[in-house]
Image (cartoon, rainbow, N blue to C red; front, side):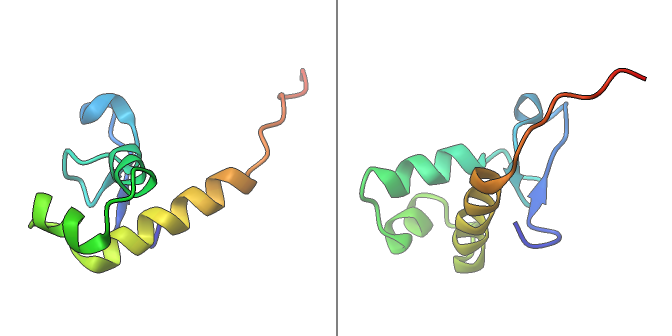
Length: 75
């Protein structure tokens, strides 16, 4: 997500990626989009979000899907 739009805090939503420090997870927004909800519908459900937040969630998901997790080599 764009700088300032994603937060990872172990004390908020169990450390899941959230939108701008709010208790709205990236997964929640992605789930709504996957279920066919429009950006406008999501903004009605969460009026404190902005259109840029929705775009940033999609960017985060695209980035995360391309990230490769490799095991750490022993020292």
